[in-house]
Length: 352
Image (cartoon, rainbow, N blue to C red; front, top):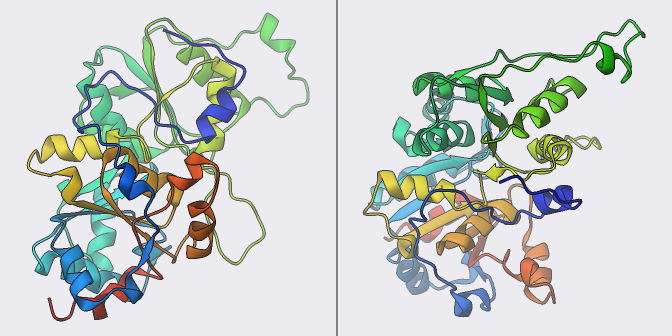
């Protein structure tokens, strides 16, 4: 069913998890007591408290950029701590909202930077998009319209789902094209398109928004968003780098329809991990991230333990403000634990 609303843009960027046709694999847990607890600084915990905490989880899910690395460089201590998790018997999964890369590219990167891990332990939103269409029984005789990059199309290739060509798609720059042109020379739509995937697209354009919205408005079409991050954090510049959320919002606003959001903080990212590894228990899983409104909220939405690191987007100072906020949504972004960076845990676990 297509829902029309004048508040779609606001709804998408508020990061409220959207429902999808899959039956939830995660037990509903309110964890009200934990939600009211202040964030604990790992540096101030006793050795006994650290040991007790580490004994309370078996699985680690960690964001990548801002937690493990920045750009092409590993954050000092992060590779060693990931390896230490494994030495302590923890299973480590990499979970990222970046839809521009296939999992094989991430596998190359984690190996090169010294983190290690198997391909099946890498979960990106491009992979989630393909997995989602597989699980809802998408008709493989139909096509997908992709607002995005090769990371998405390569994952679709892996499951045998066909798609329209991607890349630049702009209106003519001869100065003669206008909205009036659409009346006399309508842009043709492919009747075989049965789904739209909206992700990060460096070539976003008027025609892509037009086509994405039009295909999403087709009766019975699936409309998927990889994630809704507003911006890409980039240090050393005053520029605002638009994130996937701005592109998703453009297509969704034009379509008058909310997409199914697969990336953090949507539950789907944890559900797909748990479905493939049924022994994973949410209460014994630690979610690590640098962005509270995606990483930490994923943990809160799924009943996971949470650790915020200050090496990326959000800080301890912001967390302290959220703790006393009257806004319930801000209080939900308070992590259970905090460390300046992941590598700082190394000194605390030497004796374990």
